[in-house]
Image (cartoon, rainbow, N blue to C red; front, top):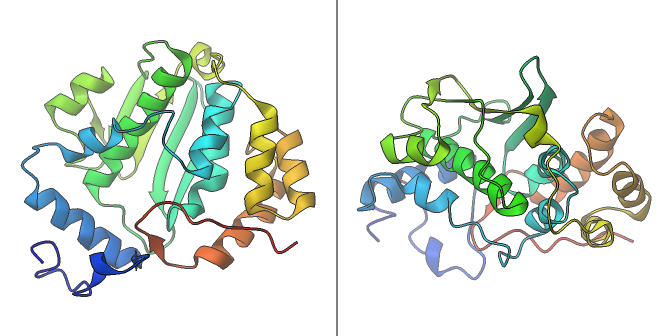
Length: 239
């Protein structure tokens, strides 16, 4: 009741079997949780909660990647399963650049952006068993406090969107749990067979716009603007 008070969220939200929110409700819930938490930097705690035992299709797809670049590309493809978010991957002059933002009209709460920064760096470290430190970290005002910056190993510069730049050698650093067969299994759970085969064969990298064009509408047609609060949706293909 404390979380729902003053947020405009349904009174029975957390009592629902599969509670869900639209983008505005998600931002309100995150802000309410942050304001009620005794943790001065809840994004750091949430971002570090990642573990190989966490069950979700997007994380499975990332864990079984051959390297960090591929893992981030796969997460970008699967991001619509989480909510109205986008993860953009590009090769810049300094290295691999990763940006997290909302879809048009959606503003990502700064605390959530900070949690994503921690999550991505933590993924890189756990999957490679190497202390990966990004070359640069940027985010909206309020995204990171001193403890978060200490974890990331960098001061967080101010920017509209959460941004990480990984060194070229870290982008291709091998993941210890690489498993192409498991990635194909995950793809088959959320895509029609012909799309799953193409994505799996391309290693899920976002360089081919046809992959995103063929996959994202499939996911969005199931998720719509709703964000599931009890985990990633158990989506199946229409086949």
